[in-house]
Amino acid sequence: MTVDSALRSPVNYSPAGKDVKALRFIEEMTRNVDFVQKKVIREILSRNSETEYLKRFGLKGFTDRKTFKSKVPVVTYDDLKPEIQRIANGDRSMILSSHPITEFLTSSGTSAGERKLMPTIDEDMDRRQLLYSLLMPVMNLYVPGLDKGKALYFLFVKAESKTPGGLPARPVLTSYYKSEQFKRRPYDPYNVYTSPNEAILCPDSSQSMYSQMLCGLLMRHEVLRLGAVFASGLLRAIGFLQTNWKELADDISTGTLSSRISDPAIKESMSKILTKPDQELADFITSVCCQDNWEGIITKIWPNTKYLDVIVTGAMAQYIPMLEYYSGGLPMACTMYASSESYFGINMKPICKPSEVSYTIMPNMAYFEFLPHEVATEQSELVELADVEVGKEYELVITTYAGLNRYRVGDILQVTGFYNYAPQFKFVRRKNVLLSIESDKTDEAELQRAVENASVLLGEKGTRVIEYTSYAETKTIPGHYVIYWELLVKDQTKPPSDEVMAQCCLEMEESLNSVYRQSRVADKSIGPLEIRVVKNGTFEELMDYAISRGASINQYKVPRCVSFTPITELLDSRVVSTHFSPALPHWSPERRR
Image (cartoon, rainbow, N blue to C red; front, side, top):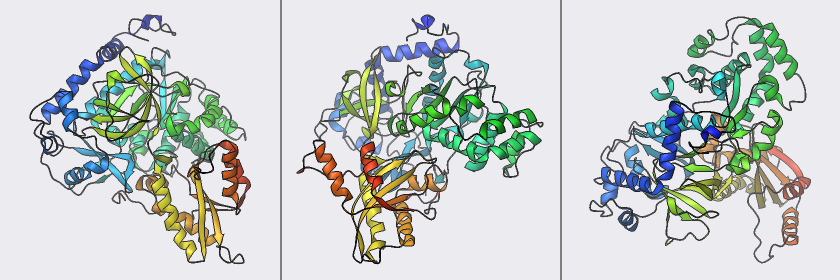
């Protein structure tokens, strides 16, 4: 839908004022994609021409794309790590950017177990804010009346640290929520949250969740949309309600805040919201939540909800059935595509099926190139944003104002079409990611290392792991990693004890990256790792099954992650014992490894 067709919106919405300005901006950007991209790369190269990094490649003042692409190499995080580490350690010279690096945004990806540190400059916040400002004008084309109520969004800050040089290192959304742009945002009837800032900004996730849920219950008739960043986050909120509804109902019944809330800022803000007893609401919450069947619970408690605002693409697609169950089939809106490296684009048809979500890249956000995925080699020619082809898959490569040059983001995208002249992309997957519950991303090498480290404990008992695979269990809240092990036990009369196997689970968790461990310890978005020991010969059966479906016996390799239901059912039918991690792994904000 374009500005010209907005008057023919399916909801008969006539954009006005700020919405018209935003929609016209989208039209301008998407009709002049290549022109905008030339301008962006010229600006980046001009302002960063004196940086140590770009001078290394002898651009000699040239700001055109051809020279840039012929001289500056495509890189990964590991290639830039020495420069990033210098900045993190306090070097303030112009290494990557001519503008001062003001903070690092921590990527959910890792390098050798460490969080990746993405440099950012002050003006990047303005770019992010610009993309946010486009979301509601587009949504208003499809969903009417969002200015007549509020949004119940479960938003949280995560632990942050400082680099040795004193720069903040934190997730991109934590940076945004703590910014003045968010905390002092002007009143906008289309973006009114049920949660006060104090609840969102509380570092204690339990107090934050409790307060935000309580606000949502108190304002249940005003709520027009529910959301969280990830689908798993919204499911975790529903799980929290299942566990804590009695206490929440008691607060509503008495008009007093639970003693579990100790944060002074939350207590003060909640005193203006929880102002008196409401026995009728407390009785309603009790009558709904005491039921065993929670199907459609979202629309029972929040009857005016029009849609869910959550990311359900990529690894989050596994949560769609549970969201449909709890919401009674409400639409799920994926509104934007962004990462710690840069914000990229928006969904021009936000109320579409999850399987049809495509993001339109905004060409002013960064300089974009695309590495053909299936034929990617060191010599592969990268494709311009305006020149990608429908149906093909590409790996995203970006150049940013903050000093990332021809950086491989690791996202695999498929071109689904064009909005004007701007390509639209479906997010396919993260490159090389094996397991993911939420923001965690575990690749095959990390999983292999974790299995090897845990196996040492078995070796002491004369037992070894002869084969393994894994899958992300998301039917539980929170989800957790499941590892299937087939063991060779030297003395069948003395198999590994339950205690030893539990320690193996914990050792695996200790071996996984810091993002996983933070999710376990601080965010509580991942449950204890589980090892399921299967009967001997199970992996032979797995191979036989694959061959029966056409796999070559000569080329067969055990999959290190499985999701195909018949395979997980086969594995589960052969389980002889299950074991869970008995404790939390070690993690602290200061320890990035």
